[in-house]
Length: 322
Ligand code: KG4
Ligand code: ZN
Image 1 (cartoon, rainbow, N blue to C red):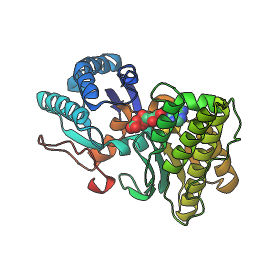
Image 2 (image 1 turned 135 degrees about the vertical axis):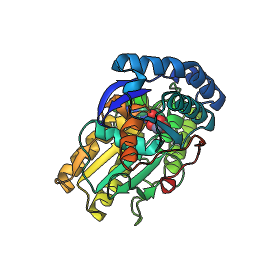
Image 3 (image 1 turned 45 degrees about the horizontal axis):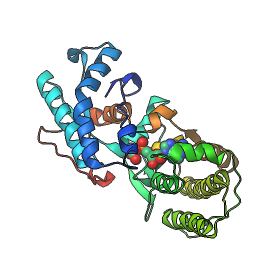
């Protein structure tokens, strides 16, 4: 829950982390996520208003995400937002969760169009071309696993707690790229990704070593895995930026927190496309948060894109629906 001024200044941004409950199960259990939302949502709302030092009558609109995501969690957010909007006579602004991830960058600096966004999270890996505010064209995406999903599955094999992206990232910096994992679809003439082959190669290597009683170096495994992910993401993103007339490159979503990806993209962009500006939100705005939804809502509000009270959750909401 967050309070945003003019779509660009964060007055408060309260995140109720569910990581502890999900760690017990090694992943997100939808029913657990929903229960957590019900328990936290009212507290978060009160905290967000208190921290921003605003009262409901000072607000202009209520933004809410209606997809993509888990239906139970989306419905709880929608119900709370509708009730609050109705009680205070405020317009309800529908926001796509992935658009929110991109607009997190607007909380750092103004967006300049046309821009390219690399969206990398636990559920998505896609390249989105934006000709202008509120316009989204997916020009490349993963054909199987999302990048964050690959991090979490590989981390599980190494016995790391869920989600394991951050820890693998830290381990990677202590090791070397010695295992020569595949770089999927690099040579193909498209902007799509694939991470399931890399995941399988990693898991097979670890299992075969276990059967032979061999010890593998965990830091080297992490470094080799990360080198493959980063090389593929960077190469395809640079290609996308060369194919479209972009002024900025935004990296968004939980995996945008990855230090290897940040460094790799910075270097490649400086070498290949020095005129394209790289915008990566700070760590706390990369993962799921409400401030980014408020930032994206500003654009929708300007277009008078207001939802009726029968707005429903769309778990598989795509950009085309906007
Ligand atoms: O966007 P997000 O918070 O949630 C959604 O999936 O919508 O992204 C979470 C994902 C998880 O898979 C997590 O392992 C990954 O982001 N992640 C990272 C890092 N920090 C979080 N992956 C790689 N390196 C990181 N530093
Ligand atoms: Zn997300």
